[in-house]
Image (cartoon, rainbow, N blue to C red; front, side, top):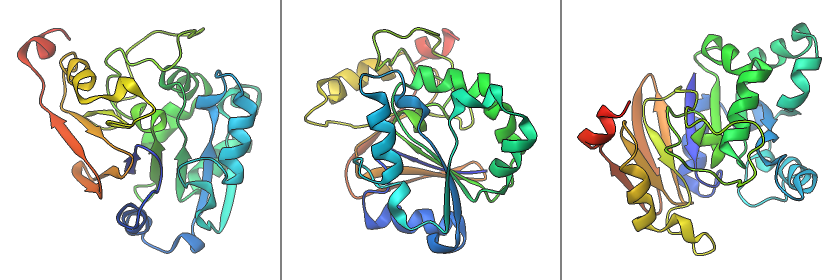
Length: 231
C-alpha cells in the first residue's frame, strides 16, 4: 500500500500531481472509497459527512473527478457480511480517509475489521488521509485529542502503518493549538520521528521511502531519548 498523508486534502498542484503519480493513472480512470467516520462524534456530524461526500467541505478529496466513488461507513461494517464490503475495498484504487476525531476513527478502523484488512491490500492501493485520517496511519497520537468527550477510547496507539507520527494544520489561524510552540511540546512525547505539516503540505510514502510534498511549511522533529525510553 502507498500513502499520501495530508493536512487538508489535495490543496495544491504539487499534492495533486503526487496523487496521480501514486495512482499510476489519471484520477478519471481510478476508483475510490471515501471514509467519513471520523466526524461522526462531532456536533453536526451528519452535515459534515454530507459536505465531505458531496465535495462541499474544505479540502478537496471526493470532488477530484474519480471514475467511481463509494462510501465506506465504518460504524456499519460490523453488521454487514464481509463478502459484501471486503471486495469493494480490495478493488478500490484509493481509500479517502477523512479527518475528525483520530481516536474515534482509529477505534472504528479496528472494530470494523478494516485495520486488519489494510496490510493485505494490493501494493498499488493508495491510502489518502486528511488530518485525523492521516494521523491514524501513524504509530502514536502523542495525546492529541480533538474531541473532549471521547466516549470509546483514550488510547494514544494508532495503527502504525507508517513509522512516523504527524501533526496537521501547522500554524493555522483558526486553530490555536496548532502553534509551533504547542506542537513542539507534543513532539517531545513522541518516540518516533514526527512531522508538523500545514494545509499546503503532504507526506508521500512508497515502499517505506518518505518524501515531503509541500507548497507551504513543515518541520521534522526527531525523538528525544526520554520519549524513546518511555515506550
